[in-house]
Image (tube, rainbow, N blue to C red; front, side, top):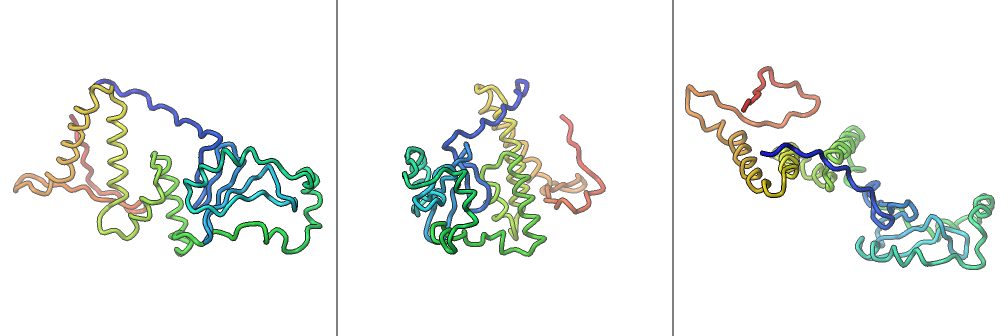
Length: 225
């Protein structure tokens, strides 16, 4: 194979791109809009403009996240009403706002996510694992962690291995990638399947998932080409 190319840095999000902050909550790349999900649908919250009551300008509810994405460019053109005071004045007068005004205009909080329903320790571990998988390049890290919880097979470890093998292939010149992918598949099959079918006295091996706090095996295999 050709020498591996240096991995390109991830492109920063554009102004209208959505950056996930937590379950049911996103923010645009420029930080202007916050997107929240509730029982009524999706809401687009403008942090720069305001409604006639001096509160955050909220668009929605919209049925889907795609509908929210489509609404972002047009929402940038909406200007505050003439009766609205500048934002600096609104901050000074926030303590004098009538009770119930903010609650009447703000969307209800999003429902608890599956992580919020876990015991504190498990929730903390799940969030840490999501962050770790995000660093591995997973765009769907939360979904991978959710599928892996309680699964009978090592879902998470398997996908991490596959992700790293795909990264090796993607670093090859385009004309070499198909051949590299075939070699990777063959190597993965040897490591994952062939070791349990050997006949005595040939040693056998198996790939297993080890949790981060489990002790490592006393004897490690280190294949050499």
